Length: 403
Image (cartoon, rainbow, N blue to C red; front, side, top):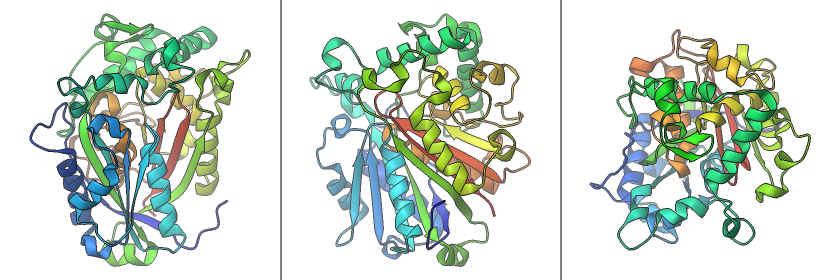
């Protein structure tokens, strides 16, 4: 178990709306909006905060090298430290882990983490920017030239999952139905809609078995979180949300070199997510995740990935993800609601800031402030899992609690 100097709480979060396009704002303005909301929620000013950690999936999306410098400018972050993390979908997990460690170590008593992307900038005329969306998380020497991009890699994972465990396309489609439906209750959601399993199964095939409605959204959104030491947290709020456990792990980047692709592999042995969860669970004292965790936000880049994640996080036995969704256990009224605000599929997908979005969502749930999609009774323990990189090569897990 980690030996830490300080307990760490979340004292401020953002509450920003996800949109397919935010033509009214630059990415600087979106980052400022998220940071301003989190600072206001915490009841502090930027001058009270020593460090800012910024994350974005890829500077190519926003057509701006050295984004961190200009984010600092937009936030008025001068003559004090701001660090940038750029690591595809794993960016926010690394940024949040670093922000947490700055407070836990005693280096700072308040740290701001802000992250996200303005994906619509990538498709500006003449830039062919969405080509970057295909290759940005993959090895551009040994994989991309041979057709190994995000869709193809995840389609191979999905095919293996179906073959080994008998998971069906209909079971995966139930995740999309759940998350789009949950988004109807979330005023900040981009992809709110009532759909059926048949709608998902009949949507446009992209890379079998992945279809259009199996996919997460493409969004313009930033989100922000403020971490505080125990002393500062108790000064600022009478309902701090404590960080109980943190785990972070990386796998090798090249998809074909990973244990995932070896003969005899089982998904229950996936090193990266299992390793991150194991570390977080040990720190938080979690031994029975399904019964000890009350709400979870997980990275549902594709509907299949949410099912796989149930198993990787120990919510069910290996191969049991399809059964769990069929039983309704992960619905808002189920035993362990997962992505009650809609997740990446229904709410929005801020590639570089998904961790900040998800911590904000869990904090709202634990405070009882989630409105129409509030889990009742208000949860006491929540989980956030972020995943990214080349076919699930990076994962970070946070356990949060009210006391």
